[in-house]
Image (cartoon, rainbow, N blue to C red; front, top):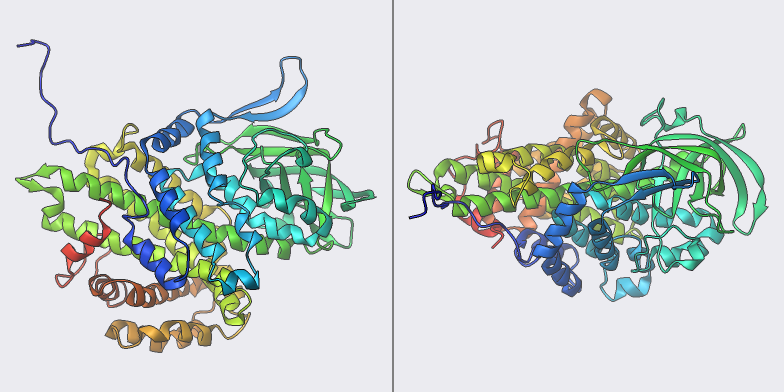
Length: 558
């Protein structure tokens, strides 16, 4: 016997690898069947297989281990302001662009022929974004901003005509070059400054008129941005103060100018972040950078808020995807690891924890995909109203629940969940990533205040009543909440109560959706716990009446 062999490794689970993320996500399939019954699922089926492969998982790991590096100058002392990424980052970007997760949906969005054919580009893209997030979320930042910025460019018809086809292209080109020489481009956004944060009206960056050309009114920008993510994008929509009395306005700022020279955008440094490691977030200065007006002078805030609606949708989708992957990792581990004579997943307490997490995950998927459906039906006034009110609600509630679920999933793996290597390292990455979706594009209080603004846009109570009506009679607790909701919307429309109102509406809509899309075991346990009060203050406190086995069978990733 070899004297150096001290033990045999056993009772350690096999990693969750080379599996189909779409085929095993029954909650997502049912949400798509409900919200877009004519949707062609073949692209999502192909994407689900691709992002579950060992190769793509390796790319995700390497893109996070080998983080972006800033090069302000070349070896000869010339200013270049370039960020270098690991090849795996570019492999992931190519896959995401190839799947049409960026600006591609806008090629069909609003097209009556596409709608008549049953195509739902926003729902399809939302499901794909959710699946890709399970693999690697941080490099999706420029993908999300491209999605949000593309329709915003319509405020400048000339720029939109030149750039929209490139933004909707499925070709990823990482080189900094003039837009006309690239098969595809990406876009970012720059809003936040040191002194203002979410209060963008406090921005000090100045825009001075500099004539006009084929793209319209041209300006020179001088100032800075404190959080400027994905600085290697081809162009950005930024806020700056136009000459008085106009004030805050929206501008299109390309990295490379039409004549091929580089714009005067200086990357000062990259942020050292808790998570979101594969993505480069930076601080930048504009030293007389050239930009073009988008929309009207003085209308920068409404223009940016319109784009923020789309990125807030992505925060909900991204967190839903991360929750699903955290749950999948916990289920995979507990199904294989034994303790006290039987698999962990067979232990009564662990069953309760896992089933409770599965309810939370499925409810997040249901609400996120329903919100995406509202964007596909923007021609319908009621759907526009629902999109406006459900966007801050979904971002607030889903993102708040995500961090708690990720922590619980790590605990299911014990010490294995706290390490950075192997399959278990995915959970550590997810845990670090979770807070960014809650913070980015407006933290919890900003979402609660935005909900109050949305309440002034129309008869929200009536729209919500119509949305909830199909679930009437499914559960007594849900019926009571439906009856009380119109009064709550009116009584709680204050800043001090806005968070509570967002929670109540989110739970009501999630419950109603689960009644229509999920098996009885799921929606009955959700209503009993989240609305009926048969629940504690943490995961794993479902009541004895919950059908744990049925809930877990539905959630299993294998």
